[in-house]
Image 1 (cartoon, rainbow, N blue to C red):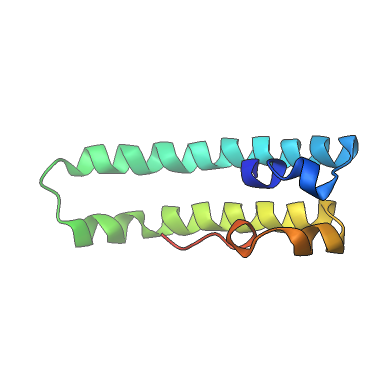
Image 2 (cartoon, rainbow, N blue to C red):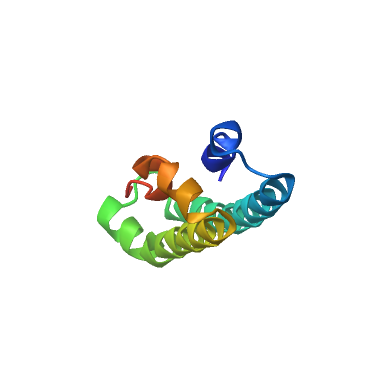
Length: 99
């Protein structure tokens, strides 16, 4: 969301659009913070010598949950922007790279 807001001048966002995008960004931050906290706790429980494959298997669902939150935020942002504004955003902003 901050990347989209970074294009506010180029996209000529209205004050209303900025407010709505900021609200989406704030909600996403809160959701991702919860996922991140959960992943960090799981990593600490596993310890320093954890098997990476086993650890990933335990974290996989939370990682998918984080990606789902990001997808929903992008869909909401697309609904705030006009089709022309959305089209002018770089693909890297509209479709985050998988991690």
